[in-house]
Image 1 (cartoon, one colour):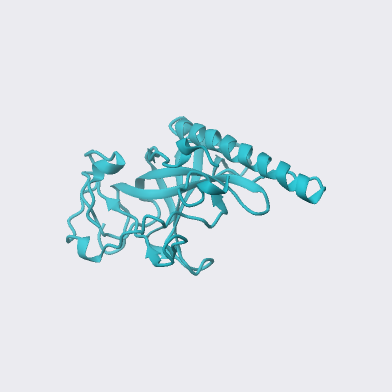
Image 2: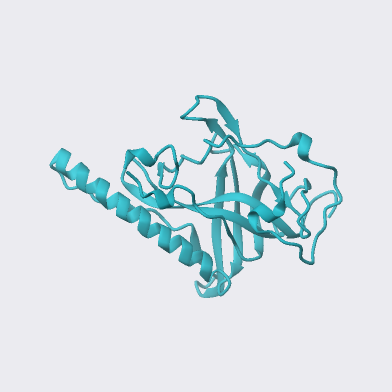
Length: 235
């Protein structure tokens, strides 16, 4: 069985960064019919050290699980099975000449819908968005906006014995908004967001249109997610 200390993963906050190709208001359905919320965040390299450390630690968790599964598969098949690392969800940015810029980009994702393996019922997710004061907002967030991402770092192992870490979006705070046409009400403090100087939303109350995700709706697209209650009995 999986180590129970990974059943409930903590929510972390990214540094402030620039949103690149964000899909935060509505999911991207181009490559996945269930839809996927996502954003690439460009951050100062020094400020991103904490995020990189969290990912590296969870990568070790995934690697250990993949190695154990590889050993079991080798015994069953009598053929050598190895654990294979997937790309990290972060990378050091480089300029056109291939030199490091001192900035780091990280890819954050969250599946938008699915079917609960426990109940068999469909679920949907909407990303909670907050302005710089911690107020819920509904304005469209475009590339170039300055944001902070509340995320969980989820180690995973798939049936091919590939392993990695997924940075799952839990909520987003918009510090500086870039949006056309203008520049789930939950407490922002639940994600560690406090008031700060920056963009303040003046939109309507979004609670009537918000959609909450089923508790069994954690992302499973990368394979087995370590730390997920439903999957923990597999190990």
